Length: 210
Image 1 (tube, rainbow, N blue to C red):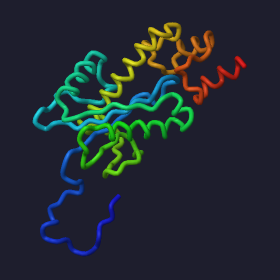
Image 2 (tube, rainbow, N blue to C red; image 1 turned 135 degrees about the horizontal axis):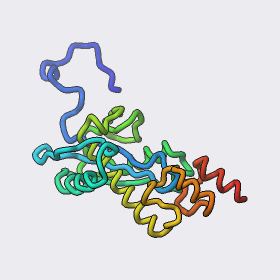
Image 3 (cartoon, rainbow, N blue to C red; image 1 turned 90 degrees about the vertical axis):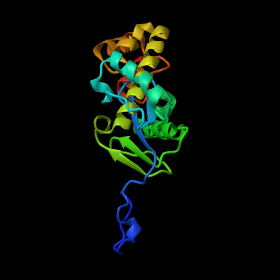
Image 4 (cartoon, one colour; image 1 turned 180 degrees about the vertical axis):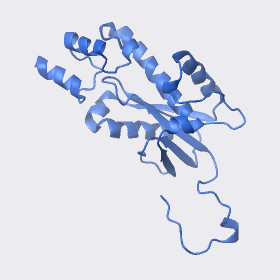
């Protein structure tokens, strides 16, 4: 947080907002909890002249509504960027650091450089731009809501693609989370190349087969 000097401000500084003027990017992620697949992050700078109705926390929306908003965000936002950290990076760095890495990549991937970055949650990626973490920001800040939708739809589509490659795991249904069906598939088939080996249920399964 920037320090505030005790000396009186100059007259032209009195009305300056705490946040710098300019473009604001919202950032969110999808896929921290699953046992498989990359963690995905998105960054979005919305266009005030082209508002998008119905933006909300992606978890509160139906899949059909998310898909529709995904296309609308891509069409109407000033710019947006989707990035990820791989399973290998998750296993090497840990899921928190991999998530922050994906967020950093998403921000750096924006065509326009924002003056401020608002991130869902309570941790910030390493950036050379002023940033603020906002708990439950995906329900409070439209740009973060938009980012949550892009990240969620992108990862869900990844799961659908992987389901065609490894149908025995049921990725299209559970999206990589540790459901009873997924755990049973792990017990029966072991881990595939997309599983996070640093996550306890996967590591325990690999250990039991060794």
